Image (cartoon, rainbow, N blue to C red):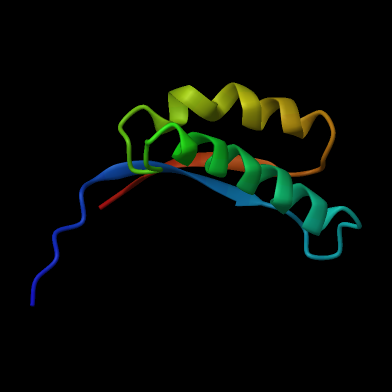
Length: 73
C-alpha cells in the first residue's frame, strides 16, 4: 500500500520538560489546533502557519517555549 503525504510546513515547538507550566502550555497549543479544526480545516492546510502564528507568538508572552517553522515532505 502506498500513501502520499503532501509537502507541508509545520510548527516545531520546544518546551523544556522540566518547565513547570509544560502541560498547561501544551493544552493551550492544542486549543489553537482544535479551534482551527472546528473551522473545518486541517493542520495540513497550506495557510495553517499564517493563520495561527500570531496566536502561537501570543502564547510565548505567557509561556517559555521556542518554535521554528520547518518544511516537511
